[in-house]
Length: 89
Image 1 (cartoon, helix red, strand yellow):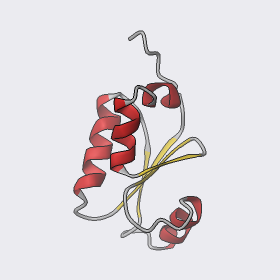
Image 2 (tube, helix red, strand yellow):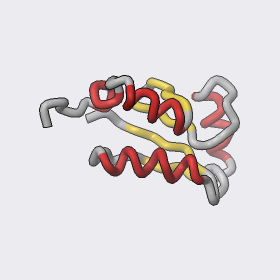
Image 3 (cartoon, helix red, strand yellow):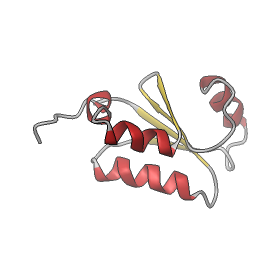
């Protein structure tokens, strides 16, 4: 299974929705709250080509983008493959 990192912030509905989808799929992920760990914001922005908003989601080294991007991948049928999930389940 892929390594998933989700950069989040406080009181972020989009962050909660993204985590909800990943949890629904049974995917373990590392959550980094940039409000609690401000030094991580610069790392997030570097990894995400300057994106400042949260969530910023990475699957392995692929920058997925934000919550809407994650759901769009799922609707297109590409998220499970990217996550390394068995589509037959």
